[in-house]
Image (tube, rainbow, N blue to C red):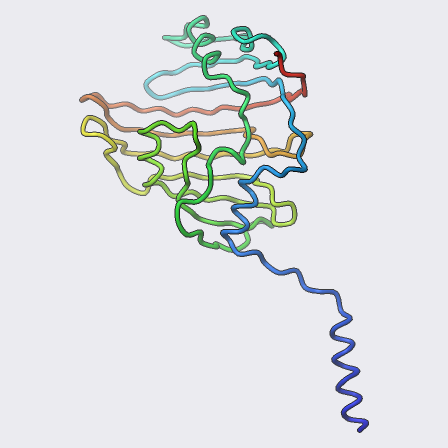
Amino acid sequence: MRRILTCFAVAAAAMALPAVAQTAPPADLLARALRISPAVPAAAYAYDFHMQNSGDETGTVKGKFDPSRPEGDRVTIYEAKGEKADAMKIDKRMEKNADGDIWCDSVFAGADGPVSDLGVQNGLRVVRFTPLPNERSGGMERKVMKKVVAIARVDEATGLLKSMSVTLPQPYKPEIFAKLERLNMEITCATAANGRPYVSRMETDMAGSAFGKTFSAVSTQTITNLQQVKRAG
């Protein structure tokens, strides 16, 4: 009887111990990281941007995006340097595409297929997947996404993305007139005041050919000085 009671006591003590945190399946962790939480308040942000390009076209562009200003006047170019740099053309092009979507959790719509767990590195959970394009992706981009490998690094405690890498493992011809020889992308995420991770830095290295001409481009884009504003309109 004493032996049985001792066993019960040990079992009861074990049940009283704090529960060990369970590791989430990689697919669930990635889905959480790429999902906008209802608890995150909707917010518009003004920010400064800096783009540095090298390769076929070398130049620097510095400016500001401010969604509190009326459409057509949201982008201000402070500096445009380079052989083919035209501040007015750059302003017009960026204004056309300016939607204020700087968020890491909306770069991809999810995973197109299985998600692999690569373990923990530097305190972050690392997963590998084929990215699912978001609704803004064009036809060529959608084709390329099926061929790339993406790596996401997630803070498991908060579910926030900390960085992502995208690599094209081998050359790919999305069209008969175009071939992509190389594509590497590194995305660094920081957390805005509303709790969402935004793309604070993006480095892209790509090379290929189109219509019989080769191209090469290396670019670094950074976003700084986020300030919450009221969206115009």
